[in-house]
Length: 401
Image (cartoon, rainbow, N blue to C red):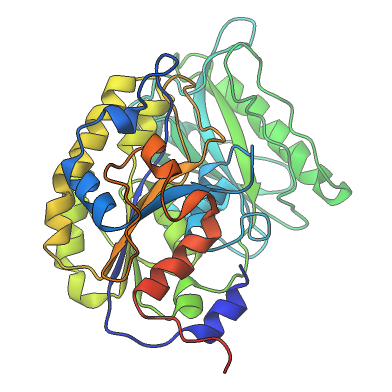
């Protein structure tokens, strides 16, 4: 999907579009032949929208590809994730309002737990409290490196931001996170000759962090990933011709909105807070991205029942959203996070689009098996969702004579 092509087709309209992005909504059954988390959940409001709209399953990046949150979100926003790629470090920085300078290298960090042999026993250090994170970041901020300034900032719970500032830095550095317990942290490697200096700085930081954190169990080591530098991309508003707002409580997802030029609105920490913000700012924007995090966290924790409960909590708030009378509502996830895998997965993601101009497809419930038969198709590329939503909002003009 070429963004410049879509940009040429946009036209003004007095319509409003909402993207309700339920993070990690796709799942798998506990046992063969059973129901997924979404299918298990009681979702009468989403089922009604599915019956009145059009459904399908979207593929975030490509067949068989398990996406990170950044590429998965960008795909839903209409940006080809293979062309428009940025590491999670930049997203974390933007999400907490850190002032990235040109040439800065940002990385997302996890506080983790390692045993006496240096093997990771918990990649998230028991999801330590944010207050503990702040104290640890204050200690790490005292680290000095020969060749770059060091900035360490709290994100939330076990996550923090590392920024290196200096001359000749590169974001082409491999991550130190092996992405599973039972392994030691990896040594950072420069993926290009220009990145060797940065990799050496990262290695130096990790070694000094290990010393600083030695007595701070369970957060006694760090993992770093998503090394990146801020890109220069067309904004969502420029491409689709809308005043776009992002509503997200978690910093990284606020960063994703800011990355593509959305006005990211201040909101509280709960889903109810986010829906209240949506109502309060309804008259100010044409497009709203509303992010729901707890579903993904439950999936990553392997908690099937908690993920079901979080999906039901989203469903209970749908009537509040519909009272605002959106012209188009898209409900989907960025990726699947099955509780049985405790991680993101490659499985296509349930999607529904509701508007006055949808061709109803006979789907009457919102779940993976039902969406396979929907009119959007069983494997629609994620990048096609926003153009379809904007067409339903009467915001795309005819192409050609």
